[in-house]
Image 1 (tube, rainbow, N blue to C red):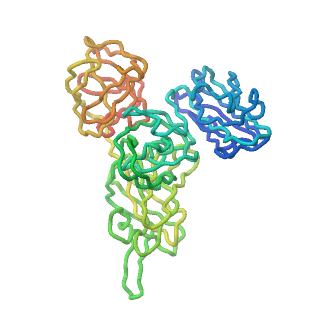
Image 2 (image 1 turned 60 degrees about the vertical axis):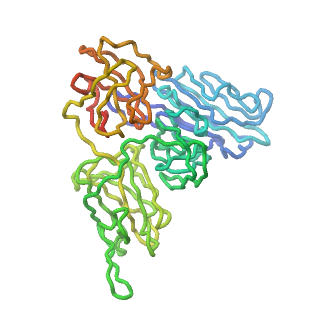
Image 3 (image 1 turned 45 degrees about the vertical axis):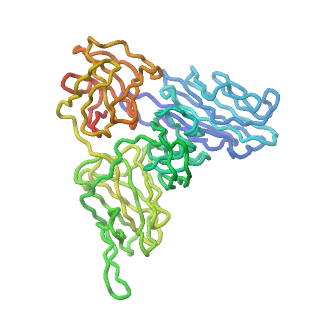
Length: 509
C-alpha cells in the first residue's frame, strides 16, 4: 500500500490531497499532495491476467479533482466485463478498448474519487495510464503529451508528478532546446524546471528547430541525440546564470607524486569548472570528504553542474549530497521537494561529461558543501553553480508611462531584459473590468518588446484608493502566484502577503 500524508501545514495553507493505492495490479504510482500519475502493472507492456488495483484520492475542502486519461487500452468485451477501468464517487465508466473516455480530460465536481482497475483472462492490451491534479491546476496534461500536440508559440501547462519514469523519448538539452517530438513533461524534468516528485507549472516557447540536438544527462534522465525538426521546445527558467565562486575549501586533497618524483596538487581551487586539469580530488586515505564553495554573499542557487577529472585519469563522483550554510559554521542538508530525507543526487558516469542537477526548491545560501557518497576509483570533481543574486526592495522602482490601459503596452523600465515578472499599471480613470479567465485573447498581455513570452492575467483582486489595480499574476519562468500592489512610486506588498524581493529584475513573493 502507498499513500501521501498530510504533513505539516503553514499558517493559512490548505491541507493537501490524501491518496492511497492497493492491489496486485498496480504499476508505476506516484501520488503527491497536488498531483500524481498511476498506471496498471507492466504498462506499457501487456497487463497481467486476474489482477486488480484501487486508487483513492481526496482533495482538500473547496477544491475538486481533475483526471487526465493518458492511455486506456484494455481488451474489448461486452460492457467491459473482462477488463475495465471504473471511476467511482461519482461514477464514470466502465472503460475499455470499445468504450473509451469521451475526452482526454475529466473535470469532476467531486473532491473524492476511487479509481478501480480489474482484469480477467485476456490476450492483449497495454493497460492504463492516468494522471490527476486538484482543480487549482486546470491546465493539467498527461505524461504522454508531446511538444507536437501544441501549435501556439507560447505554452503554459501543468505537469503532474511521476512523469520521469514513464516510457517516452526526449531529444536535446536545456541550453539548445528539445526536439518538439519529445514528451513534454519528461523533458521539463530533464531541463530542471519541475521536480518529478511534485510536478509543477511549465512555460515554454516553440521556436524554429535546429539541425542537431545533442544528448545530455541531467536530473537523473538521459536525453537522446536527435536530428532536424521543424520546431524545438525552449523552457522558461528564471534565475539560471552561472554564479561566481570566490573561494574553494575542502576537507582534504590529494598531493600526487608521479613515477619521476614530481608533485602535482589536486587542491580545492582546482574544482572550478573550466579550469585546466587536474580537478579537485580527496586524499585517498580518507573514506569521507567534502568540497566547500563560498559565493561571497547570499545567492539563490538553482542548479549544479559536475564533471570528473577529465584527463588521463578516470576519476569521478557517481553520487553526492549537498548542504548549505549562511555563516560557514551551521550546516543544513538539502532535502529537495519532499523535505523528508536528505537528497542524494546522481553524479557522473564518466570522467569527461558534464551532469546537471536542479535544486527545486532553490537554496538561498552563501556557502554550499558537496559531500561525495560514491565514486569511481577516487572522489574527484569539477563543479559550477547556477542561480541569481537576491536583493530586498528598498526603493521605489519606476515603471514609466502607460500610454493606454488596460490592454496597452506599458513602457516598462527594467534593469534587465531577462526579467520575467512585470505588472500593468492603470489609472482608475482608464480602468475597465478585467476578465477572470485567462482564455480570452484580451487576457493575454505582452509584457515587454524585449521579452519572448507573454504573461497571463489570472484575476482582478480589487483596486486601491489611489485608483491603481491590484492584480494576481502567473508569470512564465516562475511557479509562484504573487499579489503585488502598484503605486505611483513603484511596488509595494499588499497587507497580508509575503515580503517582496527583487529576483532578476522583477518582484518575487
